[in-house]
Image 1 (cartoon, rainbow over the protein chains, first blue to last red):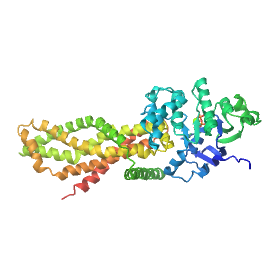
Image 2 (cartoon, each protein chain N blue to C red; image 1 turned 120 degrees about the horizontal axis):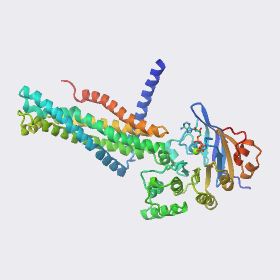
Image 3 (cartoon, chains in turn yellow, blue; image 1 turned 90 degrees about the vertical axis):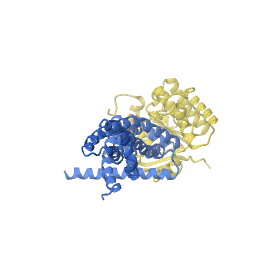
Image 4 (cartoon, rainbow over the protein chains, first blue to last red; image 1 turned 180 degrees about the vertical axis):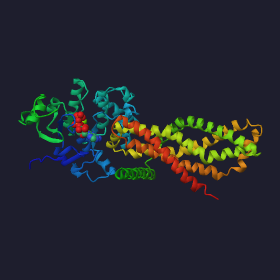
Length: 254
Length: 256
Ligand SMILES: Nc1ncnc2c1ncn2[C@@H]1O[C@H](COP(=O)(O)OP(=O)(O)OP(=O)(O)O)[C@@H](O)[C@H]1O
Ligand SMILES: [Mg+2]
């Protein structure tokens, strides 16, 4: 029997509106377990909104989201905690707790969710800060960090909880090229070593092309294309062509 | 015109519903043991430190003017022996609870609204939710309990400061002796008067915490919204305290 790929995230006919604008319109896709799923699109395409919906930080107007076989639409905030415990989120603007040190930020979920000793906790914090290239910053406050440094602390804060799924909102925006490739390698390594599923949102086309297993392109809240990086590269869809090659002329109106 | 009024009425009931819900969520959190003691204690310290100085200044000056007026008026009727008691009645019944709570709404309440509003705008509240932490249990409940404990305490201290302020002005009058000012209080001021004033302040404290935290949590997504939420939290608290005070005064001090 051949191995049937198992979707860990299923999104069916999702609509999200604010006022009379469709922020997301009839979005459906699946993410397989252990896959790096890239989402690209212009600023305002609805990428962040999509991630917020996957966590159900906001409620869609229509449609269904199924995480690991369970629909999250009917769940109460308390029941959602159980689902969210398996999903890590790295926010576009980091969303670090600015009244806490870096170490307290990174330890936040662990302190509340498990009974580790302070010693073990300290070791885990150091280990995860090391992974994102932020060693020896434990006692700093978020206000003392640059945007890129905060972003990496945000990644450490989510990763330390060892989730099955990671949602990254622009993980490398604002990072220098070296640090960006460290983060890209990390995302790939987490898939290869731990089978972690990642949804990576960005408008960095080259980055997505190199790390993603599949890529979805959003344009004005709709799916324009979805497929392997190679397929998208060769797509004759003019929207995809214009975005992938970053040209000013084409069907995408600014 | 009618639709505009209708919208206001609906908005009022929506506000009432949401704040009542927040209240219920807090009580549920409290009963199911969700209170974080460390945060609560630091909130209590914060309320005390931020509000006590201004509350003390407010009460000492109010006490002084009341004491001054009372001394002049009472002396005309030969009632100089009751000035201390009169000031104490006014402080405990009305000025203590109301003025101290205004100060707390302006100092501690606005700080709560600003802090939670900033956390909302910078997605820290969403980050809490992604880490399976209920923002009401984690952020609102400690502030709610801290207000419940600290507001009556500050009001009690404020009452004493007010009476003491009255003393400084009253004894300027030749008809009022230092000793009689204070000794007129124990025999005449009923314990119930003090308790009823404190009970009022418990309700005002709940109003301050709920209004401020509600404004913070429902703050819009722009930074100027934080400023607006902060201002609104103070204005709404003060308006609600006026209303609650009238109601509670009639209930706690029935005529006859
Ligand atoms: N709270 C909100 N109220 C109204 N409109 C909103 C709100 N949040 C987002 N939008 C709108 O939804 C659209 C999509 O926003 P979103 O943040 O998802 O875009 P994005 O793809 O993440 O863009 P970027 O790459 O700039 O981060 C935008 O047009 C934005 O104006
Ligand atoms: Mg975005």
